[in-house]
Amino acid sequence: MAGVWIRSWFAALCLVCAAAWAASPDEARKAFEAARSVAVAGPIDVPLASQAVLKLPAATVFIPQPQAGTLLNAMGNPGRDDRLQGLVFPASDAGWFMTVRYEDSGYIKDDDAKAWNADDLLKSYREGTEASNEERVKMGVPAIEVIGWAEPPVYDAATHRLAWAMSSRDKGAPAGDAQGVNHNTYLLGREGYFSMNLVTALADLPAHRVASQPVLSGLAFNDGKRYADFVSGTDRVAEYGLAALVVGVAAKKLGLLAVALAFVAKFAKVIFLAVAGTGALGSKLWKRKKAEPAAAPANPADTPPTT
Image (cartoon, rainbow, N blue to C red; front, side, top):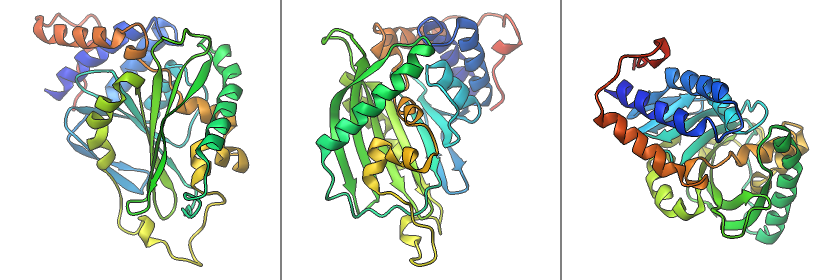
């Protein structure tokens, strides 16, 4: 049964998005078909980077690498991101999706959380986004401008989670145009951290944050890999603190990625709801496919994957 709704859902996504994204229709279709062939449906435990397990909840789909990276490229995110572990999509609607990344940074000290200045962090984020726009234009997708904090950065020392949300839109778009938002949650561990980036439309953030909460709460480090398992004097300590995770300074300082790619990766083009209301269209297409009699597959790619 899971294979049936995965097939219907990805077909609807492909139809709606092929013309809207950076990739050509054929490239978009290939990216979707590759992602569909490896997608797994919750509930299921997904091991991540030999560090943690994501208890993928029901009514969600997980797409692993390398197909996840190819799909992000089709969305207008340039470059290869070796940190990416996969993508999470909801089953019934495409109004949001989530990236899951792991950074082998070492133990990150959290003592700078009380000293940061949200205005300074916002300025750095805007500068990094401007640096990324040249690459986006080369790919044929609109430049982006950062509007501001949708939610300023907050760190929970008890759970070792850092979260914030940033709103953005296409550069030069009218002030009334729909804004996209990236809601970022970082979970710190003994040897590095996971970042889970919820991408949606700003107006839908409250609802989609609730809908995606089971995914966020489903990620937990393995025994021995948790933040509390850190051994002082023995374990590797990161060269940067929490503030760097907000603005992407860590990538620049360590030469892991160009700042441009670090920021572009956080601003995957918001699908459906931020593009002429096509989110509702995607949902309608999916529901219509459930109601209509199934047609004979036009080619082998239309055959449901084995799950």
